Image 1: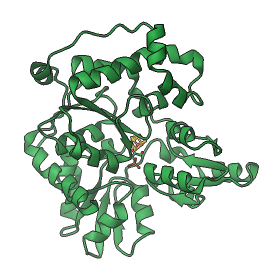
Image 2 (image 1 turned 45 degrees about the vertical axis):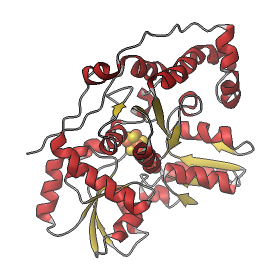
Image 3 (image 1 turned 120 degrees about the vertical axis):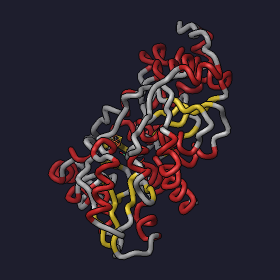
Image 4 (image 1 turned 60 degrees about the horizontal axis):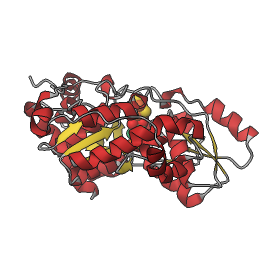
Length: 353
Ligand code: 13P
Ligand code: SF4
C-alpha cells in the first residue's frame, strides 16, 4: 500500500545549496529608503507605525531570493506585506500550479498551504520546494485519505474520480484527474461521461452540479473558513448597505452562494472586482484577499465580514526568511505515489492550457 511521505528535512537542500548567515534585521534609514516604494504600495492597508517591523524582512527576503535563485509563489490569501512586497507570482491554486511548472529557479518558496507546496513539488521533482510552515494544512485536504478513495472506487465501479487540488498527493494518486475551483466544470465535462465523483468538497461539488448536466457524486469534506458564512448575515449586509454586490467562493454552502451576484475562484473574484468596479463589494472568502484587492482597486469600498484561514495565516515574513536562510521546510513526496499524483495534476494543467 502506498503511503504519503511528505516530511521536513533540512539536509537534502542544505547539502545542495548551503546555509547563509541570517541578515541583520535592524530598521535603518537605508532600509527605509530601499523599501519606500514597496511601502507606498501597501500604505493604504498597513499603518506607517507597523512598517519598521516589516521592512527589514522585506529587504532581506528580496536580497536572498536573488542570491539563492529562488522564487516566491504566493496564494491570494497571503497578507499584503507578503503578497505585494516579496512575492514573484501571485494567484489562485491553478495559476500557482502553472507558475510552478514554468518556474525558472532552483528553489520555490510556496507561500500558501501544504497541498499547494506538494503540487509544486509534483510538477518540479528536481527543484527544491520549501514551505515556511509545515503545519499549514487545510480542512478539505484532511477530510479524505487514499484508502477512502479506494473505498469509493469499490462502491462506484467505473465512475471517474475528480479530486479537488485541496487534497494530499496520496489522494491525488488514487484519482483520475485533478481540478481547482476555477476549472472544475470544464474538467468534469471533459471526461465525457454522465456521472462523476468530485471529491472531497461537498459544496464545490454541489455548485458544479448546478452548472452542468453531468451527475455529480461527492464526499463530506468542507472548508472550515467558507462553511462559517451564512445566508442570513449576507441578507443583513444587503439590507444595511444599499448597492452592495456580493461575490463568493464556491467552497461556501449552497444557501450562501444563492445570495451571491457572482461565484468564482479567488482569482475569478479578483477579476470580477477589477472588471466591474462596483462602488461597494463584499467578498465572501478569506480576509486578506480584500486587503490585497483594495490596494489595486481604489474607489471600491470593501465590506468585510471575512473569516481568517488559520493555516494560511501561519505563513509570515520571519518564517519566509527562515526558509531562505536555512532552506526549510523542504517538501518531499514519496516516489511511490508521486508518479500517479503527478499524472492527475498534469492531466488538469494540460487540459486547461
Ligand atoms: P482557489 O483555487 O480559488 O485560490 O482556492 C483555494 C482555496 O484554498 C480556497 O479556500
Ligand atoms: Fe483549506 Fe479553507 Fe484554508 Fe482554503 S481557506 S486552505 S480550503 S481551510
